[in-house]
Amino acid sequence: MTRTICMEVDDEVLLGMNKSPEELAGEMRLAAAVKWYEIGLISQERAAQLSGMGRASFIDALSRFGVSPFQETAVEILDALNESGV
Image 1 (cartoon, rainbow, N blue to C red):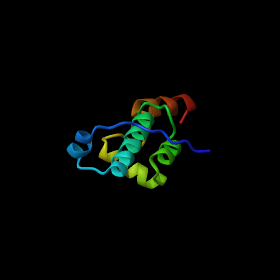
Image 2 (tube, rainbow, N blue to C red):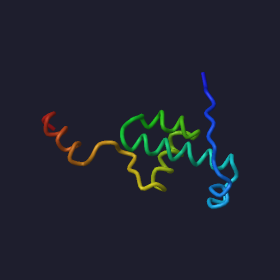
Image 3 (cartoon, helix red, strand yellow):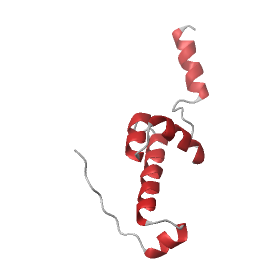
């Protein structure tokens, strides 16, 4: 099931961003998906779904926002490897 969520946005926002209402809605979906993925609230798969993109396109979009496609830090990965005896 899908739901429609409506938001009011001033015309100045649309003009300032030089976006149509549809383009702004897409940008907002992507920004929310990226942020929620970044803080670990949703998975990469769900974030891609929310953004309306395929997973590969979403991963590419993460770089635009300066967000790593990896949710674990290098230290966390090394700790996990050490714990597993590798």
